[in-house]
Image (cartoon, rainbow, N blue to C red; front, side):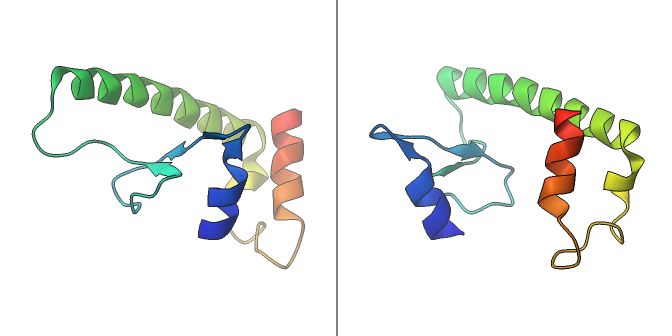
Length: 93
């Protein structure tokens, strides 16, 4: 996964990244929240990313409310069905 993301998140010479929680390991393609002593810029960045993360979580919650089957782990087992395709179809609908 590390190789796939590091190669595919470079678009037109620009390195894009994914923002994840503190549990993730810091990589070139993975940003995590600042820790330790924070500057004013770090505080602003952290607040902006928190607001975006909340919006994403609300969208995920709404998607699972409309398509309740997405929330049942036994229905979405890898290698037992097209999990990604089912999720993408739900997002599209």
